Image (cartoon, helix red, strand yellow):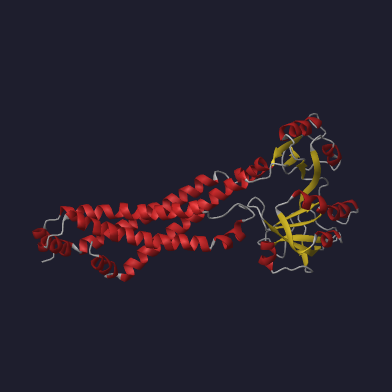
Length: 388
């Protein structure tokens, strides 16, 4: 194959070549990110802990459970610990600065999450004061918070009775070693919220949103689930107990058929880029009609000319695809820091990278077939006359 001719043809229209390669790069970047998002949603469920159950109201996740349920749930054989979780829903400066906040039991919460490590500050510092809190690394980086800073939050679900903001002191920053746990959340002492509501310092609903139930090693979750739900089968507030994976799946299904939507977007992008590359190659083949006629007159067979055009399309797409995949891999961590609350399992594994490269190669081969087929049909005399 005349490689010098191949590269000369590609560089004969450098802007067109560059724009086409850039289009393929953007398409492969989006395909990798979208595929990683779908894979991440599945991983969030698949990698969820098998030793944690979540107990919520059978009516709705937004219906609170009585505080008294904690002690009774803990009596179920196989239950090692019960942690209160309450969504806070405060606003930092502006509603656009959304991030998750939960009131929990610090000691029991930390012991229930071996995937989490406090990398700045300590559990003891967190427990040293009612107003202390702990933040995920990405959340702290987002707002530039450090240990010792004060975070004011305007209560929405639990407003202060005097209209002032809740104030929290950063006592620790945590990092997660699991894709099922995000780094975009703030946790503070449940007793701070409980005592504020009890003393009429703040208003809002009383109770517990969800009970995290940690199981002892070797415990059968099905038996514990049946026992917990059986306790409250006749009230006062019926409950639903689920494995952590199933509990997280609830939030994914709230978004609708996300995988279908993401794959539809990716398919649409790939479809559009395919025709862009095909159009580029058809234009290139048409412009080289005389060149193809000369090559045939010199003795180049249809096979070599077909290979030349397919190689040009393949090189164009493979080059652009490689750049797009490399950019996606480089942006993995920044993207994860943005979407980790919704998709804590987001990552771009080797399988997604290989799939992106194969798609780019396949796109190049298919897009090169039409101009190659046209070139095979050209007769040398007709090709030379077409440019005369």
